[in-house]
Amino acid sequence: METPRRRPGRPSTRGHLGSLSAKDPIEVLPPTALNILGAARRILERDGFASLSLSAIAEEAGEAKASIGYHFGNKEGLIVALLDSLVHEANRSLITETHRFPMGEQRVRSLVEGEERIVEDIESYRPLLEILPHALRDESLRERVAELYAGYRETVLEVLDASTGPDRGTLEPFAMLMIAVVDGLSIQHALDPEGINVRAATALWERMMRAYLRDLGIIDIA
Amino acid sequence: METPRRRPGRPSTRGHLGSLSAKDPIEVLPPTALNILGAARRILERDGFASLSLSAIAEEAGEAKASIGYHFGNKEGLIVALLDSLVHEANRSLITETHRFPMGEQRVRSLVEGEERIVEDIESYRPLLEILPHALRDESLRERVAELYAGYRETVLEVLDASTGPDRGTLEPFAMLMIAVVDGLSIQHALDPEGINVRAATALWERMMRAYLRDLGIIDIA
DNA sequence: GTCTATATTGGGATAGAC
DNA sequence: GTCTATCCCAATATAGAC
Image 1 (cartoon, rainbow over the protein chains, first blue to last red):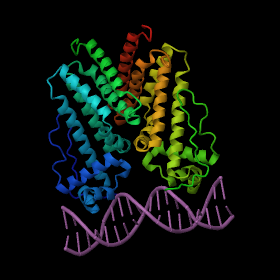
Image 2: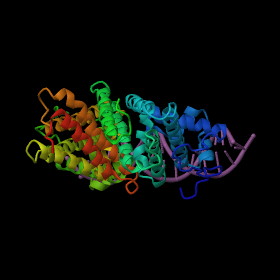
Image 3: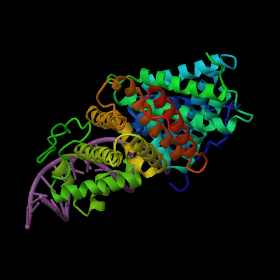
Image 4: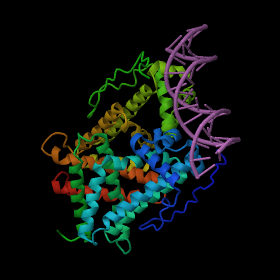
């Protein structure tokens, strides 16, 4: 526990991935490590964090258990790499999605649509929710997830064209709310997929959100 | 695993705890069981779900490990009882808090204040967050947490005096948002307690919320 | 009802052959 | 780099004395 082997190791080459982080620290791994990481990810999605044992990962990957230790040092090393890959992909997908349209109404629209999609697709939210309690107890993991959320908020600001400029200060709390609504509604939807109408809630949020942005003069009066 | 002992057992005497559930299914337990449950709860808050082992609980409670099996059948039985106690207390505290004031502006105010307090007090949110992923994978636990959230939304509706009446349908999505904002902001606050200004976000939410309720004529124009 | 003691399983880590 | 085999430990469950 004190001195993990850490032969190839993960030198933790993350930058502040605010908008477009250049190098993804995942794809440069050797094939076996990638295979193991993919297997771990599938198990996390399918069976949860508690089922993420080295034996289960090795079986899912079709690799030897000892190979995990070789490539990632120990289990914590594997989890860090797994979280990094989740974080990287989550941020990248949000950015590419919202940047498909030019600045303005269309981007706002795609932001809301992305929000609705995430809330209704429980599976996309599950891996992060699984790892969240564990991440809150580990300083290094917590920072990584915190950076992910900072990236989310940054993307919201970019969509609103407030990444730089005087509106940034007033819109930062708005970005926090925007993300909070996604998380909170995802939880309620996951708890009771049939019983509650999340669509009505996201529609109401869009209405409240547009009223606020209109007051500020951020978006045109539709 | 197939046939747990389940001698005293938990006959699962829950009702739909919408507003005021009459009997709390916790206090009727024998002293040793209560002691074990309290110890389990402390461990969950302090060390997380992963540390919730029978050995740790027995030590924390000063009881024998085997007594847990006797009173709760097996670990799942203990977790169900623990979750029930958490659910019961969470709902009761929200209700008593919001009902300290007469209907109207003061209750809305106490609702918002309660919201702020929960978001800023990470510890109060942690037990539920710890158990949530596990609950989503277990039908019986999931239903219990879903009932808790339904109770939360019901209380919001009561505060707005819309529990019965024509406004209920339109305000149900609002109640969902109200709860979602608490959960979502709690997560962001827990991830980065120093770096982000949750107070500004809750203040913005109050502003947006009041504007919406004013539009509907639910609250007076302040 | 509560205890001690133990059976049994599964987890993480690693030595050492190839 | 990858494998097999093994070590050590912690966890749950339960038998049986009191």
